[in-house]
Image (cartoon, rainbow, N blue to C red; front, side, top):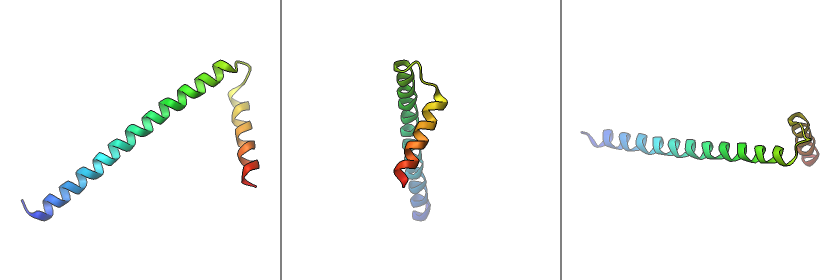
Length: 65
């Protein structure tokens, strides 16, 4: 096998490994966020999801100005 081919394969393998690692991190983050939301709504049973999102949007808008 030519040197260029080996280098190309190594670069693809490294890129693939980075993509797999990123996917794993994103899956963990999604799982953690789902747990956090579930915990929030269990502790605040009177809150509705729409109201929470509206409050977050308003808070973000106020911090941007």
